[in-house]
Image 1 (cartoon, rainbow over the protein chains, first blue to last red):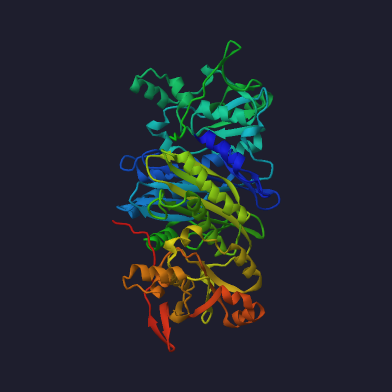
Image 2: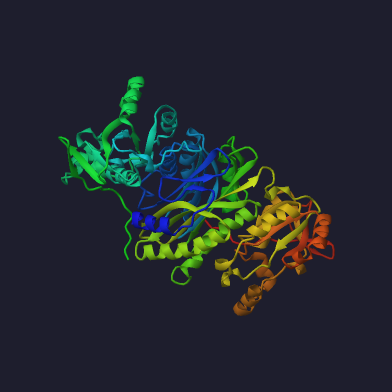
Length: 309
Length: 309
């Protein structure tokens, strides 16, 4: 659904003089002053979809609501500045819930030196909904976009993938600090954060760049929780399949020239621990798995919001 | 509820170097570059509270979701630049609903030359929720705040009040164009937009300025819909009471030195049609009605989101 509607948005929404980059990337870019660009992103989280009130710690829910937005700024190499928080609170117990949400929100905001600039607090008979908007800044032309990958670029990923639903989706710290550092030390051609699944978001980055992506499956870093989930569920879904298709990893995918990547790892060997090459970008559009230099089609899988007609 | 929680926010939320003005006004002000300030505001609207899907035209719902945010920027004399739109769509029929919402959104955005910069589109089993964030800009120090009213300032209001629930709340055009013009031609000490009711929002402006507000009740401009509503309901609530307490008028309240106001009206007599003096600010805190130069206490009334413990 998101893809169809996004396409419709792109075709329908009018352009604007100050809108450097609109719908379709991790965040929007707005020209506010010469040289400096405003980066804005928003994510809405709903009880029963993104978390469960009564089951999850409200402070962690607040943490997540901000963290998913910060992750979008990390994917653009933009520095977070301020957040706006809108709440639909269930009428019963809403005030106490709001305060607990804000405990998690403000702790994470302080960690990344991001102001909480305001918001809107409402109540209703329905379940909790949190909508967070984060504003950041980046020097003009220095942002990472989805659309800059080149043929032959290495696919680098942070961290490891899969099994986030077992708890990591509520407690993860996005890669903002590292992304700002990388933007100074590594020539990144394109980037995206993995919110809906490694294979799905990688295919989105490749599509935005007009390329295909070829994954060496044995190189995909698998999170211990993915191993645990596969063992626990014993439904035949392998840890690798979890790593490729589970949503909410909030790792980054970067496109980097292989010679730059090699030079970078020689200078900064410690980065090998949290940045893994898992393949490269190819001319043939689509997603591929590499086996003995052959490309086999791979179906992108991940989380998409479903809508019925 | 909003007042209690807002107080808690003000006491709890940490300050930030780039946050010129945080929670508690119509919008937040963020320092992005020298001289120019970013103004950010967000409002969340819910099915069954702010509109009714199935009863109201979805294009009008989209219009309203953006208009209420633009009104916050009008109240700060900030120029709208871009909007972000987050949706919780009911799964059934959600895509068609989204497109209709966007028809109203984009029409209004174009009217005010405001980009729709992106957003987040989700689906769930619950009712429609729309969260819109609008970003604008204002020269540093040129914004209108709630806190600048002075003793003796005239209370000027745009338009007329009451009965908005009969339809105006879905179709109104906020005062953005006029506010930007007024900011150039009239020395405004303080401003607020009336979202929750004239008497309630006036008392908020007065409180933020550390003053009281005295209304000459016979001067309050009553909207024809307030007359109609009073006649229709025949529950004893007068048109004036509707004008004082109905929410969602989205008119502006301005605090202006009376001699400036007089000079302004002489130069621009056409403004008498849409800008009405209804009283003045006084030293005694609280809300008052003026009758033959006596001040009688007046209870601020309006819409507040209710939360149960």
